[in-house]
Image 1 (tube, rainbow, N blue to C red):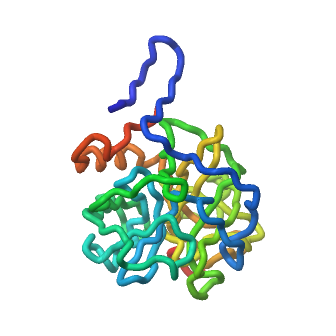
Image 2 (cartoon, rainbow, N blue to C red; image 1 turned 135 degrees about the horizontal axis):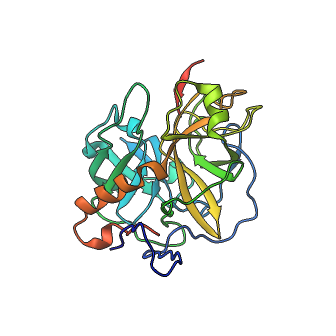
Length: 284
């Protein structure tokens, strides 16, 4: 198990990944958007999951180990008990996800500082009763390293089965959108005082490219140094794809320590939890 240290005697920084995360096969068809957008290919985002209740897609999530899913706390406001949920991975069509193949959830853990009004600390973990079998179509995404920097305007990818248009209906197929990260001050000017320190924004000033209702909890992912990182989790926004109203995401780096702590406390074998590598409000 690895731990963060404030000093390094050698003067060098070493990153160790004790599980293989953030890798996938290469894809060249990487354009489009969720709102009226382009379907994702199978295996293109192998960490994406559909979180379902009674065979109905409710939210998205991200695989971070074979046992653990990162999602949004607000997804559990109606269905708090782990008993209700099934987790589906490895498919892009909702119609291909049969209840018998859904993984049962052993624990649904909200952040204890989650605020239902402001959506601060909008983060939750699901621990599966049985693990996913890691393959080309089911793979974990990496959690950010300590103090890892993702510069403003970095290309990020948002995926999900959410509404194809504001107040629309769920998409049958997984869709994707490429959006740039937005400087916190610029985003705060659009959402003040709603934007809190644990939130980040991504999108375009002109709108048109965004997550929407049903995409909640899904990944905001960035490829850096050939590895895919879970930078954010889809949280909220004013409408979908509106001008000057970018999507708002839970900043994973700000709750990284909490995520590892929950996995450690409920780990069973250590292998269940990897060591850290050194204006209408619409819930997306």
